Image 1 (cartoon, rainbow, N blue to C red):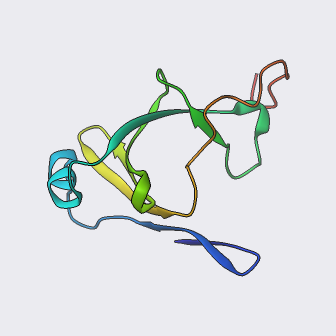
Image 2 (image 1 turned 120 degrees about the vertical axis):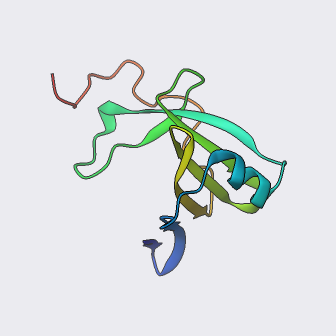
Length: 105
């Protein structure tokens, strides 16, 4: 999957066909990563997707190599998606503070 914005590639996602464990990914990509957790910003529901923000207690976990623009989405003990991104995956705080949620009640 690729995402373009104004003719510029901003994100590319790869979905491993073979099982790739968290540790195997770290062995392959190196030790210069950080673990980042994300939550959804439900008040900003965009139909097909909901933006995310960094949250230490978030439901979604990624292994990120920010200097290389590489983010590995973790599902249990395995890598679900490998993303190459042009910028950080989400902001460091919710943009919903003080706004009513647009998500399901």
